[in-house]
Length: 179
Image (cartoon, rainbow, N blue to C red; front, side, top):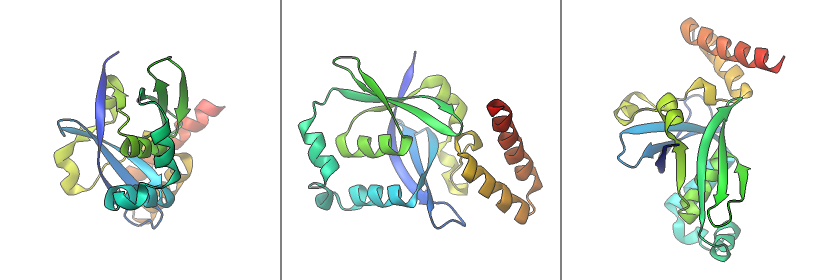
């Protein structure tokens, strides 16, 4: 299995939303990017670590990381029901646990724990970095059902029926899987 090392690039507030943000991760060469939706609480945590690293040095997550061995890595192994599936692995003993994508990004920023993505998943989910000038893309298969429903309402309200059709299809696809 081939994998690609990701790095944090930026985050942006979702237009028309006061509590949703998009985190942008890129490959090391900064050619390809993926987007991850997070809530306002996670955005606050990220901002604190990125813009005020001195303040965050004494916070509990940072303190706990100082006590842990540094033999960990994370892998984004898939996507299911609108959520990236991330595995945190102890490279020393092979034990692993699943973590939320936004928590994996925060852990990577705090501890410099490598965050990888499976190469085929990256190819499926990525977009060229130069596309940032037109806004940040969010693949609809990486949005949870609540975000999809809100996006569908907004697309209909904005009379963007083509987008509404794509979102509706994704919602129906997930409903069919659940039945």
